[in-house]
Image (cartoon, one colour):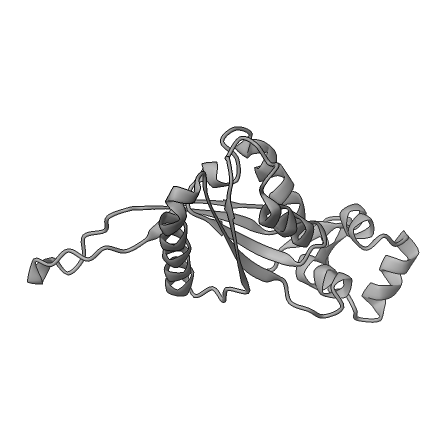
Length: 181
């Protein structure tokens, strides 16, 4: 399903004028669809033009609070990789921090991820729990991510009972909460 953006948003994202946007559309650089009286522009075409044809990426972000939990950090990253593989996503990078969820002082990789997001290079960020981004203020990050990338996927541990005929219980990671634009 093609996602669209209004002309104003496309102009703001590409930092161009309305006449340039119209020229890009007539030259075939950006797809557009007339909805009602106005044109809506294909979001993916706008981002491809912005990023010079480089596809947007999927990243994993994991975090723990203390160095004693470093093994948990590795387990969290592996769980998220397994989820992404099962969901059919290609992982382009893993960002991991050992820092407090309230303070942002020591979260070097979190800020690197934010830089990637602000450059419109990120399509999806996968995290284990909402509080991995911040203990408070998830709504602020939700707004920010919605503005710059397509979705935040928050994965929570869910036990899914499958294969009941053989009376075996298989553990799988399933999507718990997906925030999309």
